[in-house]
Image 1 (cartoon, rainbow, N blue to C red):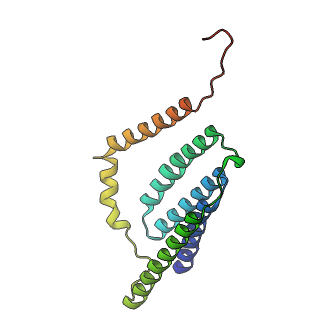
Image 2: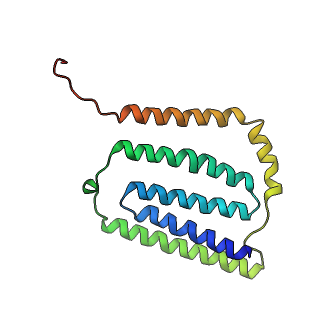
Image 3: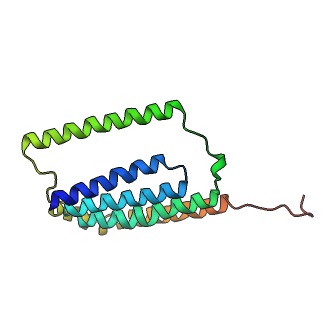
Length: 169
């Protein structure tokens, strides 16, 4: 049953990540990125890493993707302004896909040869990190949150469209 969920979440992650790259509409690409993060969080849950799954959904899916969406909407890109794919872009994507396939197949073959399971529980090993994150490193985490907020406010201010008034010089 775990292998079925692993295959499901891995497929969801890879397909939605590929759709992020392929989509021409930036809002759709951001939504596919959100779906990819949900797939990765599902993989973390299968690894019994509930804290990492929660932090991934809270920080990346909650804050970063919403920040991306604000930036995309504030930039107000039009589909006719987008450039078509070039030959080098397609060649690079093909090469990257081939490398990904080779690396994935070698990892799969190594796991089959050694008899190791694809999903092993790691939740107990992450407990000390979670304790340090919420005790020792609480201030730096909050500082990063405020920096993200300042960046979002800066984008809002910089992307604001000002209209010229008649009397102003």
